[in-house]
Image (cartoon, rainbow, N blue to C red; front, side):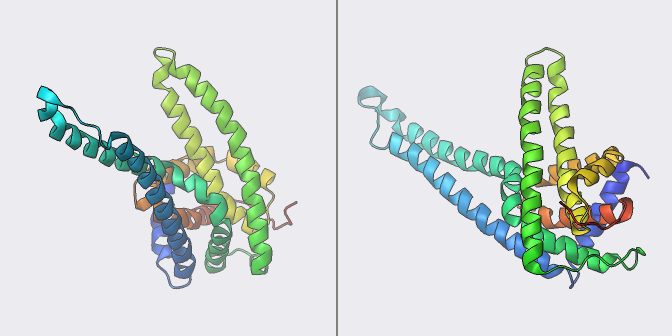
Amino acid sequence: MSAPGDALDILRRSARLALSPGLRPWVILPVLANALLFGTAYWWAGSTLAGWVGALLAGWALEGWLAFLNPLISLLAGLLQLLIWLVLLALMASTFTYVVQLVAAPFMGFLASATDQRQHGPLGLSTPPDEGLVAMAWRTTKREVRKTWYWLWRALLLLVLVGVLSLIPGLNLIAPVIWFLWSGWMLGVQYIDYGADNRLVPFSETLAQLRGKRALVTSFGAMVLGLTMLPLINLVIMPIAVIGGTLLWLEHGRHEDRRAP
């Protein structure tokens, strides 16, 4: 099966596993947390921006023979406020996952561990390391900070490159493709690493292994990225992607358990 076919199969199986009794609580918790954070941020930002537009146009009206245009202006002002809400929804839908990764890291670590505990037996793998909840939460949060740094400075450099390519006729057509594929790679690393971290594999070794399966990792991440851009689906795709990343690591990674530095 091709890499995209493998990635799609993993996501399909992950969606089924997310509904299983053993994993369902660890899926519901991050979904509720994401919905609360997303709803609060969306309502505050939308209300603030729409309020600024309303305040700017309040009390403003044409006089004299142009007064007949005032109802049209009021309609356009209302449409502008609606457009602000819609644009903000699309923007937050495509960026929200990155914002909550650090906040949700402990939840994701617990979900990866629960997935590993459920799947390692049928796959013939050794039992994953036993670890307390506090230790796991602290470890996954530190790992998330490290991954964020790995992503951040590379994203800035690539953003400059894509910006330059966008100004060159002909090459500007491949700039979005480069950005999308790189974002897919990074999301693939992001979610697969939860399974590797659960097995206490250092991040540097995880990257070395994943580079050998770049097509599969990028395909998996690109599919998750596409689903992340869909409103409402972006609230539930994160735990499904964690399950999928853990499955991918268990089935395609090497599992010499060792203490991460």
